[in-house]
Length: 459
Image 1 (cartoon, rainbow, N blue to C red):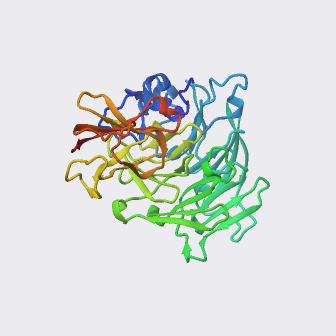
Image 2: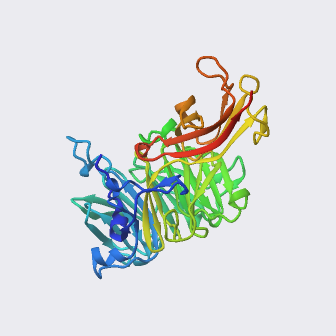
Image 3: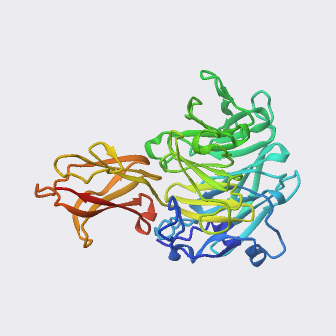
């Protein structure tokens, strides 16, 4: 698999060399691709703007991102290039789009203005496999349609008015493209989300959920996956919206019924702000947080799973993360920052590993095989294949509780009666419980997270 998803559209134009291995202490919810897949490049810096584009542009107020595997770039006779992506990124402060046409070439489209091929501080962008590109041209109160043909973006048309009331956009901030070709827009100034089919007809006007009394308040963040998307597990489509200045996340089904909600100020999300949103293959929701410099991850029910990263410019750190996009098929993640961009693969992390004996947490007494059950508790930040081993003092495996079993994101429990395969009880002594988790994406061949705890067996 010849990766280097060259969606380092952003990345290759701004990237600085970085090692591609994670230390054991690193968070592994998102991981750096191995060297052979990213050539040692996973972080972007402004240095390469000049190296690649000279004085044509500079990095100013990055915004939305879109990553897609274009059919025009696919060779149907080989599978070697099936995961090489094209990434479109908004350089909002200069009202332009930066995008890659090859592994080493980056192009610029647009510039300030209101005419054809011009933008006014655009914030949102989406793209599909057929080369369709849609931009939320925020300052011009319009949606712009483009098409990628022969390594270039071409203007197709604009949408200013719609068959709805009011019939125009006001500061549209984000866009999404469904598998059906439907365009979804957060019409921020009018507190609504509009869905337009390929003919331009309005198929959905979403202002909240009347039955629950929820109403949008300046919706900004938007991510949509439709029911028939080929890279969505369970085929349960979602429209996820961030509003109230990024303090609330709302998840609707594709018919507009509210399913789940979460708000900042609750638990570990006390100071969270949800800026840009993306949805992965399993329906998990990712939200960048410019204020805290982290990425918040939620499961498909909007239950908080983890917050990845911290402020800084090192590995696992972010400098005001902005736009985020996920290529769901292979679990590739791109994040724009204040002065750069980063490229990740989806990994998995084991959190809160614990052992309970006799129903008591913390193993206050040694495990009594055959008399009291052993409960192994842990939390996963991604759907994973999990192996659980019991090893003796020499490191030899004496029992396997789980062998590459698929386990869900969130809390998990494994139980064992302490009996070995031959029916004997685990002999008294000191052991080590070893839990290994691998993601189910293509990164599973390269990454795993391992957690261990001591285990003492009594007579």
